[in-house]
Length: 231
Ligand code: 6PG
Image (cartoon, rainbow, N blue to C red):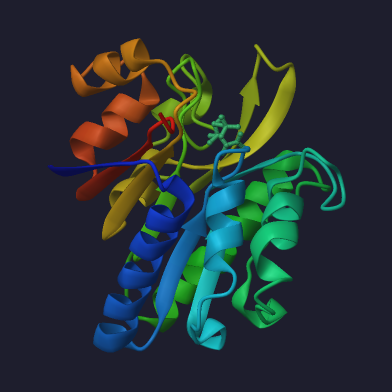
């Protein structure tokens, strides 16, 4: 595992720059950029900073690391958040976006999305779909994507996408599994100044009860971008 840490007071701009640089490398090497978006609130300003970038969005494959089991126009939808902050403002063609269908039965939505990724992988001669960059956040309980501590999806060693019931939320989620996350060329955790340092310390200490710590330890190349409060 190679871990890189970036601490910045220009969180959104620097995170957007990191994504742009990753995109340019992938486009130069393989003619496409396969990016997985993170959900929640932290990425909002990052996506807004990314939207004006001069990028060939038609050469992108944009996926979602997880999704709430709600319709795409629901305020809880990660797709809705990404659409408002990035996809619409950047005029990303719909053909470049793979949306997890949170509005249908979770197991069906997971199967459908997994099949879509498997088809893309097969078209590229890959046994497993390989993202160029997966963006991730962390919850206060150490979850990442929708891999929550103590939930069944943590045990998925073969599926690439899972429907995961989260008791603490009393709701279903759709999520990438560890095998899909570990297959990525790069991982970038986006962590704003609101996250407690004690959580970061536990993750970096290798506390494997925290799903984010497992990604930090086992993924290929992990970059942490920490937003620091303005003085
Ligand atoms: C989600 C996310 C989740 C998120 C963390 C942090 O669907 O909620 O994918 O993993 O990244 O919960 O959320 P905030 O950025 O809102 O703190």
